[in-house]
Length: 398
Image (cartoon, rainbow, N blue to C red; front, side):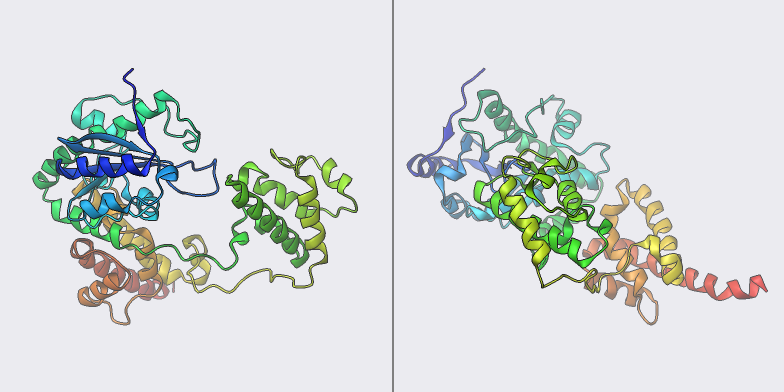
């Protein structure tokens, strides 16, 4: 095994930036986080490869600000696999690509059966990459040598893969589509932080009173504070199921909480005082949460049959046509058009359905120009046919 060096000092980092800037062609970049292990979604390792420069592994927590790497190469194309997963943590350290090539997204547009990096490299380049460390805890220090070798391999073939994929995109007349998708990935706004994130507790819907919700809220908040302080994934302290179980029961003493078998998890007993204080706070809280918060989001399609059968008819008719077109284009239907966009349009279609009005609706909802061109006529026809079918049904049943 060849020893892989991790750059962990600002001085070494700046020297590496100079070398990378002297390389040629696109810059391959990847980031390793510690999802499921840590509270933060920061990058704990960043890998970079450029032709005639080599491969570099950086330790972001040790280096800090890495914006010099972007500053020296801000006009270059950056190659990523599944860019939407890494852009946030790269931007956090000052690397903000303005031009990208996403090999995973391209593989989807090409209709490849498997789009994971290892699978795509094996299919298109004939090289097998071991992926046994993909779910490792990358916050570990020092990082084991086999992990570093694995991480380096993730970027060393990425530019070669990019070139091969570009040829396939050109041959299938999808290169311009891919560039639109890349730009949409860069332009995608950050998710809006919920004002009540505790409502995302899995199983919260099984709680039946505002008091139970108050206890769940207090436990979630307590867990979140500890998780953030210790930089540990909240679920590794106590799982959501423990919060729900404790919220359903009435406990008179801390011992009763400790005796609850459903209240489990790594820190369920070692931090029992914290959880007990949260239960007490939730039990005494006079600011009870409402059972349901108003929402302007549309309901899931499974509820449309009773509430909006007309919308369901439009949705199903359009889905059938789009699925057929996706097969013709050799790509997943969800890449031809984002499912949420179709649901929104079927729920609230233009007052007069035409190709022009549907196109405008798709654009407003965020569809890319190539998607609009490929789908607007299909959706328009589907909506008209669905409405005609609904208008005819009373006559047919009489």
